[in-house]
Image (tube, rainbow, N blue to C red; front, side, top):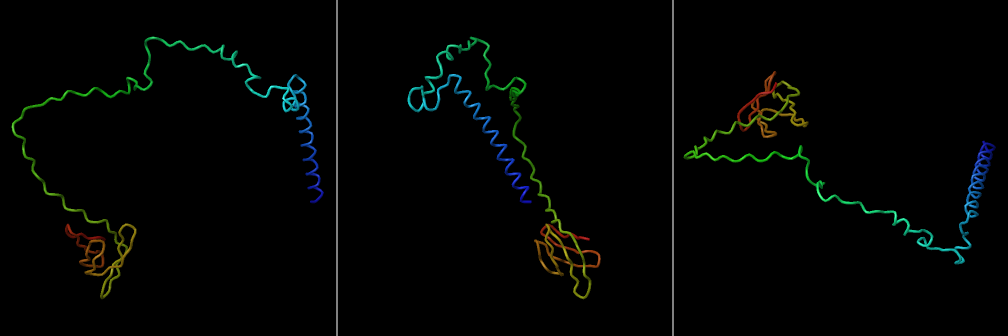
Length: 170
C-alpha cells in the first residue's frame, strides 16, 4: 500500500511539473513578442495605465448612433390588442317604481359534525369510541364532547344531540 502511495505522489508531482513547465514557456513567448516585462513595468519604463495601452478613441469612432424613426413607435408598456380588456358596456337604467322588498329566508339548520364511530362496547354501562378530526374519545350516555351530547348507545348505533337537532352514527 505504501509503495502505491509513493508511486501516486511521484506521478502527480511529475504531471504538475510538466504542466507548469509548458505554461512558463507560453508566458515567456508572450513577453518576447513585444510586450514589456514585469521589470519594465515596475521600473516605470513601460506604461502602467490601461488607458495609455488601449486606444479608446478609435473604438468610439466606430460607434454610430442608431437613427430613431419619427413615427410608428411602439409603446413597450402597452398591452397587445389581443390582451386588452373589452370596452365596458353602457349602463342602461330602467325606471321601475319602488323596489320590491326581498323576503328573508330562514337560515338552513346547521349540519351535524362529521363524527365517526369506531367501536361500541356493550354491557351494563355501554361506552362508544368515536372519532372527530383525527381525535378519538371514549364516551358514555350523557357525556358532552365536541359540542355534542351522547343521548343513547345501542348495540348497532349511537344517538347524538347537537344545537340543530339529533343524529345517529353507525
